[in-house]
Length: 278
Image (tube, rainbow, N blue to C red; front, side, top):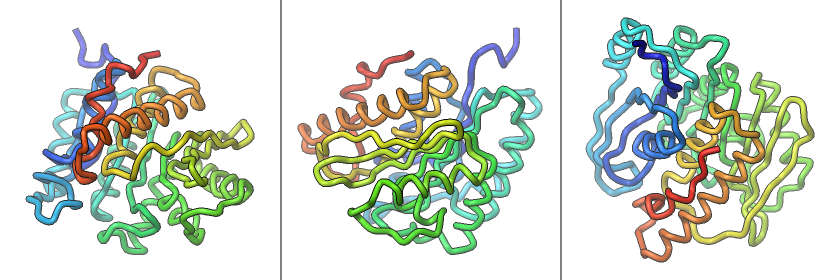
């Protein structure tokens, strides 16, 4: 009998009770794909910050004691995935977590949740952006949206009008930080949404699908959770990106049909049964 007989991903992110984002999204999706999801909460929200009011509890001071008890259990992880981090101190805790728990069989997935629609989140100062850039140096896979990619690479953001060469150059810059695989999501291309794939041993490429609705909270969390679980299940990276993009498209369509407010995230529960476990 051993705690480490099943594949596990440690997910270091905030928890929102309502709004379908972060840990609340990662747990059901990663579990559905056959991987045990073990959350490390960075903060607790009643509902995410896109709502006019919310309860918030910063978990920074309790994170290390929480993690130390996992050390006592001698837990090992097939994957370690990071999401929104609210301070330099939290980023330092995550770096130490990776150093303490990573082994030769651990995949590190960094979802650098720093901003959206061309703007950083209010907590993200230049110092925080620099620290997040350093965290990506630990990653095997990095999954930024277009805004976050621009922030990490020092590129001026524009909502549309990107040339392939510009996008490929940004993907290459991210790979130079140390990751083996990169996907830049949410690139607007007319009536399409593009995803730029970069891999250390392959030429960059773009896959795209038709837009089905407006941006909604938690979309990137769903996307990253699928890619994280697939990486542990040894799914081909491009196939995983296509799967994630296709699933998000179906979830957006289901959400639009139900006339759910944009703050409430994607009604992925309606289409979860379509997500294939490879």
